[in-house]
Length: 101
Image 1: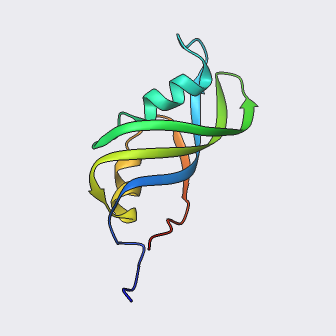
Image 2: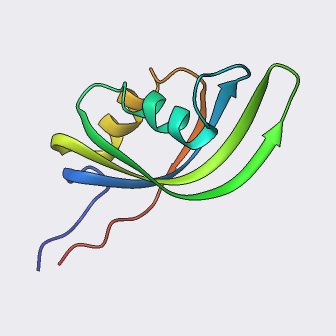
């Protein structure tokens, strides 16, 4: 049986993210969050699975959402964090464990 570590590469990542969406955007909060997350290098597709929280603030709204990120190649958790660090407005990311056979 193979040992799985956080650095084993996957092409799909599930996570809970907190992201700041500025006021006066041209789209809804969920669409804007998906667009922002798709800007990370190597992201092929983003699905917002569930909206977990909305916190309106003066100049932006902070949302917390469960997301699924599909990558163009297999990617380790450490690289996921590094790539998502460049996403505008991303305040936090909590990767969900992946279950592999």
